[in-house]
Length: 430
Ligand code: ACO
Image (cartoon, rainbow, N blue to C red; front, side, top):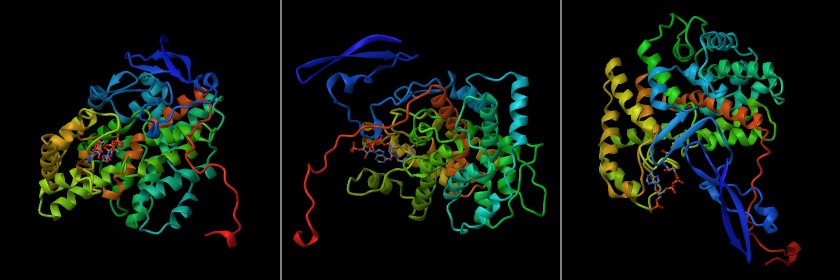
């Protein structure tokens, strides 16, 4: 809804731009007509720090107040009361499902929880040293070769089938990436288990004995996946939307999202946090030394798991995960010295003027790795777990972008390279 106007004075001209107000009162200047009305003037905003790329009804995030809600529901309530599969439905379809709809959704996902055997040939081609995120991204792209990738979303049934198929198969690919690394046989889900129970089974089941799902581990992982399920227009989600905006299919778009998530400034931070904590422990546990390194502008070291593009307050997910880490480790009887180092590091940073002045707080990744570690998940798999958690968000955002009939994503640029010049034959070059 347009509630106000903004005025821009440029080149002796005044341009009137509409101002839109979102559900929670946040305002945005609509610059859609700027180029046309100014004869080609654009805005420049590297990293999109001031740019809303879309209007979305999925996730509300207030970084100043530390608020996160999926479809209006506070993340704290969902983490406490819901399940990952229910949250997936909520994100993708907008409402909490009634029992009949939900039972069908769960059954349909289970029905699709196998992948074409020929996908195993592709995995065989990877060296065992391959990073599981590289394998996951490739296998997700390879899905397009085995299953019809939906590019026309007008058929609701085809879209629904693609969604449940993606939810059913993606965790298998993630688990297989780990099994490949371990040299273990590739296994499938068991339809008697829950979605999250199956993820644990597919990752840890050994050929010589039946796998028993530990309910503490199952609930802990379920909660972590809920916390990762969506985070509005972050780097990987924007990638998924951008790829999908060319009307590329869902698997192709998600494959790109996995690659975007892999980077250490995004989802790869959970692996980087654990490696950092290990390094601090190996270095004698000198927390102050690493705080000083993080503050030193001549040192590339950053405190991994700290800071966020949007949160300038506590990441609400970090609060939940910190509490959960304490509970899970106690329930599983795990005593991890890295948890003590993490807590010491957090306190030191929160009390330090450098971090206070820049509003750098622990983010979702700071404690998640401690829980993954307690569950026996190898460090290289941490970002895969994040990807499995983020899958419903990617699907929901891709679907919304297509249903909104958004145009192809194609940013402008400000050219600052050489002005026109003419070709010089090689023999005449200095
Ligand atoms: N350690 C030390 N200093 C930091 C850190 C950090 N983790 N994060 C930001 N800063 C400093 C920067 O050096 C900069 O200082 P300056 O103003 O003196 O130059 C200031 O804080 C602002 O930082 P930017 O990099 O401009 O902030 P931006 O919003 O671009 O980056 C990011 C956010 C990438 C998350 C950053 O905080 C970071 O690199 N954190 C560590 C990696 C991490 O944990 N990533 C996970 C993010 S959550 C997620 O994607 C799931």
